[in-house]
Image: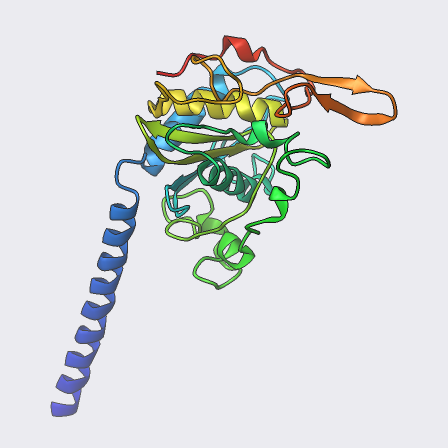
Length: 265
């Protein structure tokens, strides 16, 4: 009986310790992501954006939010299940969120679409796309343990949440999140890169985190400072052409009208 009691006490102590550790970890995640949307809020905003935007291929989408330090706070997908979208777009959405946050400031917002030409050979930021590589162990397993967690992808307990995935992505779909100052980044992926930008823009608008009043951007109009720019013109001998302003993005299949996107706050 004494041995049984000791075992019982030890078991209870371990359980309480684990519960306390889990509660502490969750508290840490909540504190790190304070002021940023929950999984439910991101999902609702993404669903509404996908339903509104008609450009591109009309695919379902992945979306990720990171805080100002680059820690993932929420991951969500539209559609019936995690196979309704391109599986590879989950990690890409996290890359885009990380990129938009990492290379935007309180006074200057750069969308991932703005970086396309700048990182091309001869561009002012050539080579940027090779910095800050994705941590694949975090992307696919969480906490350094790869595999075994795919059923959690896109859920509140997605393995990405609470971790730093890194990554740099330089086509449309990533935007800084602003409530007057930058507080993180949003990444959306799953369609053409142009449609990704449009849906990300609408998702940010739905979340109310597009308060960019006074924030500059390479797109120039104060109503759309970090909008995608289509100023790439063809040049003999060059397949992609040259961006007139150095921050342009190519058009895509069924490109939407970026000027019709809602203005920032």
